[in-house]
Length: 212
Image (cartoon, rainbow, N blue to C red; front, side, top):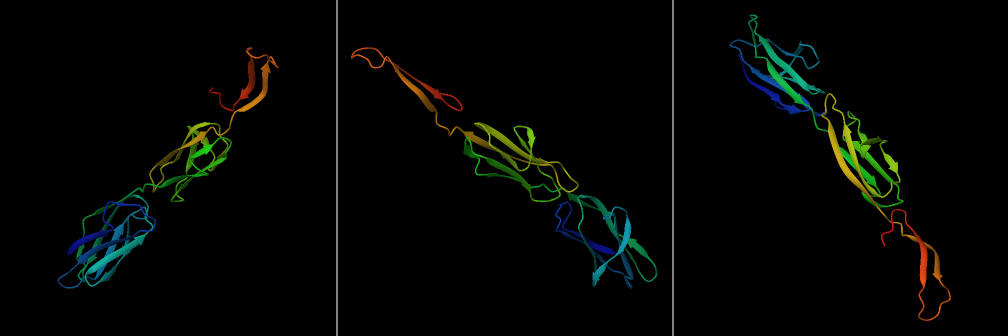
């Protein structure tokens, strides 16, 4: 008979490419447990596999499982070919959430005329980050010299077999760092008499706008 049906990590768990999985069942018999097999569909189809044991504890180990819902159970026989099995056990591995990181050089606030580079990376090669600026797809990284304004960068990825969709957002602010230019200063009339009116004019230009 069986007891102590254990799965490690316990179900449900989250996908981790470095995880090892172990499935344990304790088997005893009034004479002898002669053979134990593990039935599972971790490889896609139900099949039987040999197990290891320490005393009465029988275990099966595997790694590299993808996210999904699986089933497993163990069978045991004694020398008289009496057969017993555990109930079918469900084992669930949920998709992991990717970590997306937006980085910028030289910073998220820059002066006009400065080139910026925005890069999005993921903590796994199993997802492909896609970068947008103000809702329009751009290259990753995005190298640009942008005009004055605020730009919303969003990095996201489509869901894959093992990872959910993810997203990261940040704003790049470009402020006006160019001083106005003043040219063609004139005074009219010139010269003038004391107490007379004079008109002084100049051409003032700015890359954005002249306030006053």
